[in-house]
Length: 386
Image 1 (tube, rainbow, N blue to C red):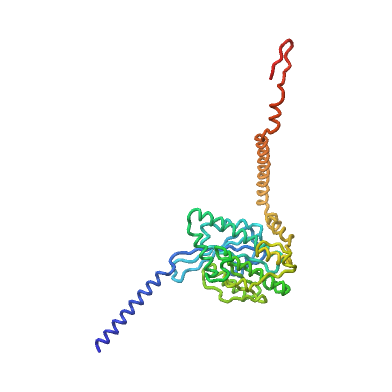
Image 2 (image 1 turned 135 degrees about the horizontal axis):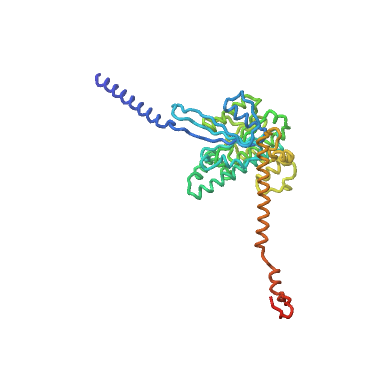
């Protein structure tokens, strides 16, 4: 009996030590340092970007204001062990497509590893949707490719790491893996104003949904529809932002129904399910070099580009009288005058240099072939050859 009791005590002792070791090892895996991430939010002018950020930050009392240029804010969340915290840098690019080149200041070699991008498209303005989406997307892709090229030249391992992560988001076994070109960083296409989108004709809604699904899938992006008039959609959008900012879980539901708000996680769509684009004309008459051109042609048959809106989007917001400020405007006018004088001087110097270094051509040959000039001699003197 005593041997059995001692055996149980020994067993209990072993279990206690095992638990202690397990707890120690688990504690060692906890986050003990600050982790920083960045989110770039760009897209449609007045598309709701500021509202999305304010709701994510729980600043519901703040009234969204028009975003000028590039605005910055941040959020932080302490780790569960109260040692260190997660920090997310939020960059909102205003101006629609006017200032997309400013993504260069947000996306760089130091932020790329922990960068996510959100492209907001206003679903209530389908004629502007394609231009807005690809103006932002193309500049983001070009910037990332430039960074990765520089890093490859320096034998950095980051490009390979980001490519592997992009493939992992889609899935190694995904049937479309070989034809997709996923963005190296997490990308979300966020369709806003879904409440107004429902007023569009059903067949047109279906085309917009299929087009966005195709673009999102080809770029390895998630696709979400939202509306600030629908509380469940607002909660889904906030959960999405929390996941990008703090990696706090994912939205598990998946909705591909065109009559409902789309919610498609990266890698959860299929080209076979998306199908072919709806064409208003004979597909044989459409000039397309690749599938994307075909989808664009199909989309613009139903929604021709709004050139007036595009021109307004390219208007310098600094010229808007709403933001007039005398001291700033006077200084800007002075700097513009200095810049104009400098431009004229540079053009004048360029013309002078061009004239100075202009090749003599046929005129030099004609001078060599011309007879020597004979200077008139003074009275009584002999002529001299020049």
